[in-house]
Every structure is written in structure tokens, then in C-alpha cells.
Amino acid sequence: MLIKICGLTRPIDIDYVNELKPDYIGFVFALNKRRTITIDKAKELKKKLDKNIKAVGVFLNNDINYIKQIVDEGIIDLIQLHGNEDDNYIKEIKSFTNLEIIKAYRISKYANYVLYDNIEPGLGMKISYDNLNKEKPFFLAGGIDISNINEAIKEKPYCIDISSGVESNGFKDYEKIKEVIRRCKNGI
Image (tube, rainbow, N blue to C red):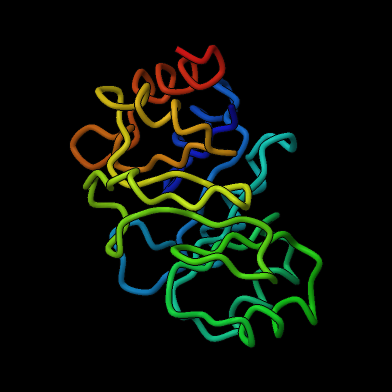
């Protein structure tokens, strides 16, 4: 099972993931969020990131030109849309890039993946798995941590997406990242 560690903000976070090898990491470009980073900071972190780990840019109703700038600078490998972006918005992004797109909350014929998460992401609040639509490969987020990751794995997502669930005191925690990666890779 694939895993994404989202909300990286510090060089030490990159050191952790370079050693522990998740499949994806996330840089938050959504405005006014606790883990939001600047383009310059993301560039600095991306330069340190292992080339085998894909960087996902997380956006929330951002201006498309801002996304284009980040794509053109080669900072990200996938685009995650976490707001009210509709199919016209996604088609416009597809007009300037071939990067895969993850769309939160709803299935789009233009996005490659769907993401199931809380409306207010990053707060560690668990979501219900009762009505997951599994017709498209999906990322599963929303309050996943060491105490409930086995339940999330049973849903057979394409990728487990964790941010606050691998933090201690608001910062990424090496041991928690190590344990969730171990469980995802070993299926236990």
C-alpha cells in the first residue's frame, strides 16, 4: 500500500522521509493554513528530497496562475485540489500540465484520483468510511494515526495520506512516520 506524508515544512522533515521512504510527500500551498509554505521554501525542500519520492502540491481554491508557476518551476510532481475546484478548473490545469491530479471529496472525470478527507483537513479528525466510492483509485485521509491505521488499510485505498497523525507537538515525528510506513508496507 502506498503512503503520503503531508504537510512537510522543515529540512528535518525531508531528512526523515528520505530515510523512511514514503511514496509521496505533501507541500501545502493552500493559503492561511498552519502548514502552508512559500514557493521558495518548497524549492529548498524539494532540492533535498529523494528523487524517488513524489512531491504533491496541496491547493485550496488557489489562483490557477499560482499553480502554474509552481508546476513550471518543477517543485511538485502531482497536484492535489482540496477546495471547490470544478471540472472546468481542472481542465484548465490540464491545458498546461500532464501532472496527475488528486481531487478531494468528489470524483471528477478529469482528475486521476479522489481524496477522502475532512472538509477542514489537517486537524486529525477521523472520517467515516461508510460511503466511500471506490470506482476510482483513492487517497484516504482524515484523522488517520497509529491507533486506527489498520482500519484505514482495510478499506484498500490506493494511498494512505497522513499529516497530523504523524506529529508530536505540531511537528513531524520520526518514530510515528516510521511506524505508519511500516504498517502500510507490511499490511499490518
